[in-house]
Image 1 (cartoon, rainbow, N blue to C red):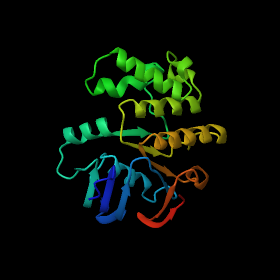
Image 2: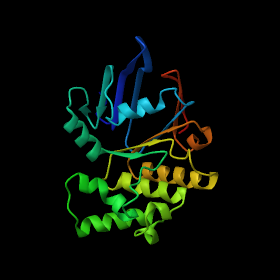
Image 3: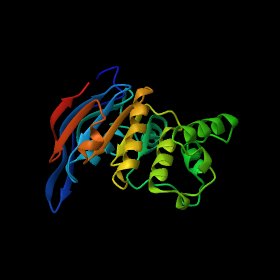
Image 4: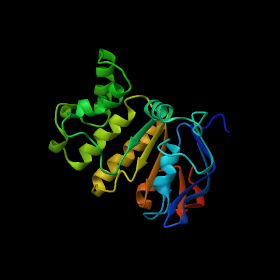
Length: 231
């Protein structure tokens, strides 16, 4: 285990059963992410990118191998411990935004704090405003998701992912539903997040989106087949 790593996978595999056969969604993946790193995983749909992110984000556990998140071994943790680890250490950005339609932008951003048991406070209000300003949505704080463009919804989801000061941000195809201009804005925000000290892991089928990262991993059939260091 690397003591400096925010997340580390050590020969991690994930196997599913399908019609009596074993299907390897991920095969012997080893990966360590340091603070302030921006790593992109590139590959076609179904190659294992989302499975890799699920293991790195404690959404799922490996069938074999080990996963450490901020020095914590995920194997052996119960559902409550895994939920607490995700809630305190990891921010998630999804392709389809996953904003709650009945909550305002500010309320969506605040939601992870409320789910973690934190009560409304001036400090929370300041944090939410800071993040909305960072993503350019301070004037949309009281708007609802249906009043936003796709790019604005994704920026709101990025603010939500950061509200609890995570050490790791996982972005699963965050530009998949965006036009080129909004995609560039989102990738620029992810780069800024990594530069602030957070580790960022981006899964994408777009080499253009991945080109901003300092490290690119290529996946095929559940395997990390190549690594390119761009720094």
